Image (tube, rainbow, N blue to C red):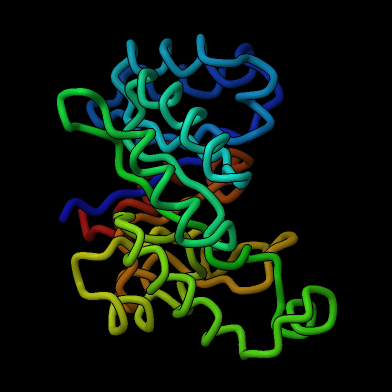
Length: 235
């Protein structure tokens, strides 16, 4: 299974995005990038196509969650964009996730990787229990959602790096654990609660790590990216 560092392109428009990516113009390694809600809602599918044209692999992070029929039809549209990974919320039920897989699969049988969000890394166990009325522990909830995702035919889940090993133990080593909540040991946690370092994420079992401000807000983003790659992939 391929492992990689994914840079979160949390910018408000295409101009800011490409100004940032231009810093990597002379680099042999084209970063794997994440396009989230803010950027996609601002620029739509053209920015995805432009990023692909520039040679980037893309994680389209839209976290779909709706009735199965709606998600099915939305995934059919996303399947045409050529992204490498996309996602949905696991709490939409197994039925919704199965409908998503069906919609994402192209006539020739190919599709992007599809992963499910378990619990956001900004969510603590206390908030989950008190505000969402989920009485299980946070690790138990994450593992159950991951098992549901596997049963629905998904390729993996988004989870905190702190839960990646539990997901692997429950669903198998080939089941993808994509983990946000990555910070350097000397960095700021920001608004995320369940975080760890690139090196620790590798040790725990993350397959992909998503890194945002630790790279995008760094004084030297290219150097920060290379540091992250070295710590996570050993390159």
